[in-house]
Amino acid sequence: KFGHIQLAPPDPILGTAVAYNKDPHPNKVNLGVGAYRTNEGKPLIFQAVREAERALIEDPAVNHEYLGIDGHEGFVRLARELLLGADSPAIAEHRVASSQGISGTGSLRIGAEFLSVYLHPPCVLISEPTWGNHITIFEKVNVPVKKYPYWKLETRGIDLDGMLAALNEAPAGSVVLLHSCAHNPTGVDPTHEQWERIFEVILARDLLAFFDSAYQGFATGDLEADAWAIRSFISRGGQCLVSQSFAKNAGLYGERIGALHIVCTDSDTTERVLSQLKIVVRAMYSNPPLHGALIMAKILGDPALRENWQNELRGVAHRIIDMRRALYEGLIKLGIAGDWTHITSQIGMFSYTGLTPAQCEVMINKWHCYMLKNGRISMTGINTHNVEYVAAAIKDSLES
Ligand code: PLP
Ligand code: TYF
Image (cartoon, helix red, strand yellow):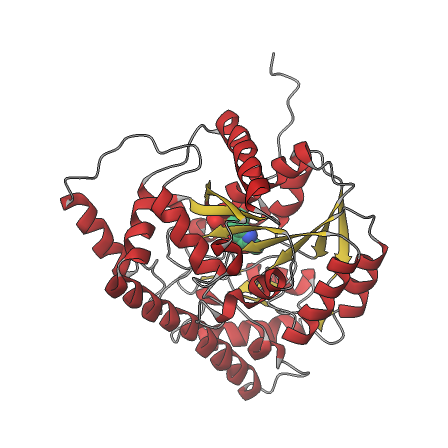
């Protein structure tokens, strides 16, 4: 029955972690997977998460019953307010259909399936480059995938003209996938003015925006500022989908906690949309996991815990920003050729270094600095102990 099945290639991102773990070299550096590490190279458990978990164990009202199909009501409400703003008119007008999702990926997946079944979009436009799973998720639900230009190598910045031209040429009804902040893998986000030009085209051409919010709080350290693009689009009357993940900003990677929000024009439509979204969920996994929802509901609903979380998150984002500066200064100190200001101007977890695949091979094979072959490094693997080593590795790779 199964003899004809061919071996699938490993995930190129998760594969770097496997290779890193196997390498016995004492100076090895993990610049592959986008997961936060402390300055000591360890995974971080947020204090607020620890406290929330402790409180949950003691709470006699907590049990392990099933959640509803659309998840934990308190979590979903608080998560939606965190993303869209507590004073969001769309929320006040009951125009947002929200369901808990299995982290960002699962929320993207139910959103993609919902679109495929109920809207039959001619295609989804995805940035070139993007997080690889975006492509696979839409392929799985048979929505044709097209790319819009995003990255301009010469400026190591955004190709806004290319992006707008692609949006202008897209068939009406196309879905446009947008990274709401901290673009993966480039680390390049549109400015507010650039976002406004993007939104003008989306609204004028009747396209449907699908925001992926995987890094709220990780770009600037400020949860409000990092939600600006989504809130701005909705304030212009835009309808959209938003997938939301708490993997990064609460360090809850393995708990798979997130949500999908669908912003509609009126409350009656919203009710019908949510009822159908629940049909999508029910056949896929029936109802979502509980633990992460309880943790986030506790943190978001408790002013002291919430503030503690936000402060620690700000520190995390600023450690990354500090490491950008340290890496940049390390490269300058070594007298590296060329302009490396993109290391400090890029935003979020990743830096798109501009290293060629051959130079990446030198980084990996000679220097044991594990990174993606497209030149992406995860800044979270850099710390005060290894930043000079990484700078030396980059300089040597360029000269090899
Ligand atoms: N979207 C982007 C752009 C990502 O980088 C990631 C990966 O972390 C995700 C979505 C989904 O992550 P998760 O499913 O762990 O929430
Ligand atoms: O891009 C990254 O590194 C993160 C983590 O299949 C990740 O988004 C990578 C690959 C994957 C799931 C998560």
